[in-house]
Image 1 (cartoon, helix red, strand yellow):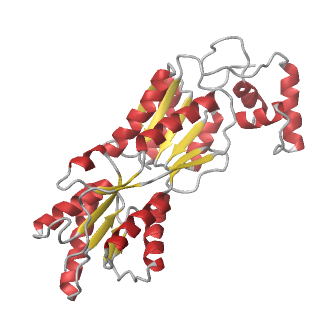
Image 2: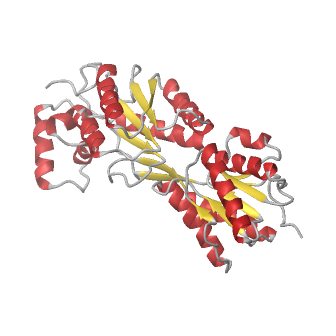
Image 3: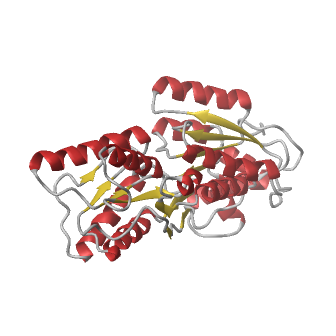
Length: 348
């Protein structure tokens, strides 16, 4: 049997990943057959058992050996959020003796093709995709190489067999909005992230849910989708305030932004307009990045434990590389509210 694609011949021990490649199935399927678990069709089970019968010396896989190469793939490399991801994954992988390669990959066919070629050259052992929606081409290419994949903060739907690490985005948004409502705010706007992001839609839904429970309507234009970066936050805040001025509508007394980057831009725009935070307008962010505690004023925000999420994604991938089955395949970490000085009761 040929060694599995994209890996070194480390020792004579046959692993379940090698069996998976020879049988044309996933390592998880091999694990189910070995442990007599359900969820495998009779034809597939027979095919795996035929391969196993040719290699009777298979044993339970040992922990990942040193020398592993893991590819961490991010769409955005230029943010504190991404820096936290890299730090969390690196800590776990280094402790396991693995090497981490960091790639920046946008949804561009040329970049995708180049990245897939680099995986082959690096003889990569596994992939962590961050804030990503794996394309069918990526799925096929990774599966053909026998590479395990973990998706952190998935953009959209992910195949059922792929482990994902996410956050309780909706619950965090509800907590942020209810905090503002408890302070007495009723005119609350939400600056959301990209409309096609799963996390962004969940946060927007949490905002709407909390407002509906309180019997409050959201005026037209007070829920704006955009992006998670500072430029988007600035553009959204300017548009929100300009629309209020043009229509003669009272401006919001509180703004909940879907990311800390957006929220910090909101604070800057408010100061430029002569408004004080939180005396005139309260501001809440989402992420609890390190910089938020040093703002003027320090930012009230929802804590998304990004570094811990990345560490969990790395540990999950190491388990897959070792041939283990990950159950449950989707994990969501808690997102508690962190109260600081950017929120207060509304003026008057």
